[in-house]
Image 1 (cartoon, rainbow over the protein chains, first blue to last red):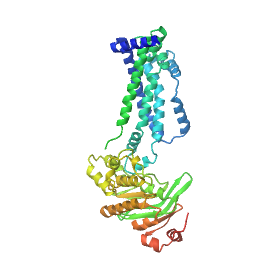
Image 2 (cartoon, one colour):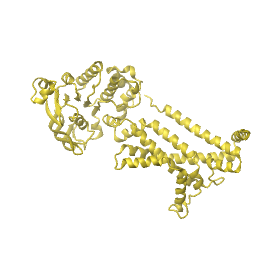
Image 3 (cartoon, rainbow over the protein chains, first blue to last red):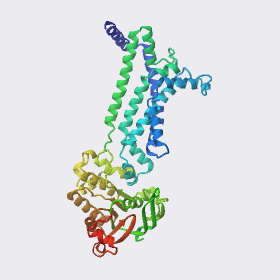
Image 4 (cartoon, rainbow over the protein chains, first blue to last red):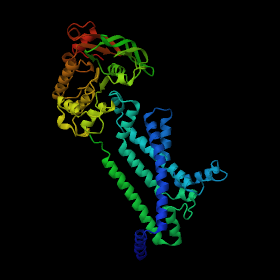
Length: 233
Length: 242
């Protein structure tokens, strides 16, 4: 127990002192995760919306596949991306393996089905009578889609929070495709694994506290946005 | 042109099932036409076709605005001359004010405070300006639904059982409002109702739709007092036809 408290004290000191190594790792984590989330959002919301609002063959099977994709094991994603980006792989020429783009790609693959799935279920939960009603008031197809998405905004925001949470705390995929290279691809989760193995519990704990703090702050900001998302007159 | 709608050999099928087949129907500009008939007769299908929300499977349905349009060639500006109110009001989860202003905002109108407030007053819902739909009663929701359609000053207002399940107080408010708007603006109103007394109170002409066919359409007095078809007589006489 004493070790834990000691490590906690050291961790707080590291955070408060603004250690440049720690800051670089934090910045890299945020960079990778934010970029992956932006790409996943740009892909996931339109695909999820289209899927919800369009009647296509085999929709139920495809929906089941999307929902399965929401729980993709990060290690498996990491392995697949590794194989794709390795020298003999189909995307080997890009030279992305053990670089930030590889980590962004892996995290995008993890988060996109999640955002598609949550958008899909949020849009489907909007009253189906609303769309013909809005069209009967003169809304174009796109205006109807925008209004439907606005109605589904709470669910979608939750989806974004879940997506962010799942990829910033993910370790398997970034470890495999990033390689945990010091000063290059080391992020919070991979650094925690490494420092724990080394016995540097104070640093590992400091990074863990920062990770939790980022998660809390993101959730807090999004919950605040959710509260303000009610449209004024 | 006297007729705002012209229908010839109109047919609507969903899969193999033919739900509506009307040989001929003209709807006069500025009239209130009530459509009555049993559930599942095709009344709501006809309304959706009139509102240009779906394309007919076969036949001809044209609306005469500045020019004549069908589902396939009607531009959005012309389509916006038609507003429809559904049986179950589907409101946006915004304030009453935002719901009523919605159609005007769609049309690019930035300031609409005076219009919205006037419309809310006319339907006696001005005390609910900032209320959210989930806090409203069924009658209040339907009044919001009618307000957001009528504020658009459409050429045609289509109403699908707007007062079903409402109490007499709400029915009275809505009927008076529709009569006033019709008198002031000459809006063509097509209303589907299960309440034949409502049809009698409001309509210039009444039509009976039965089993996907338009059995009879005539002026209100003839419809109720001297109908040509025995099914109309049975319907207005209170006999069950289904």
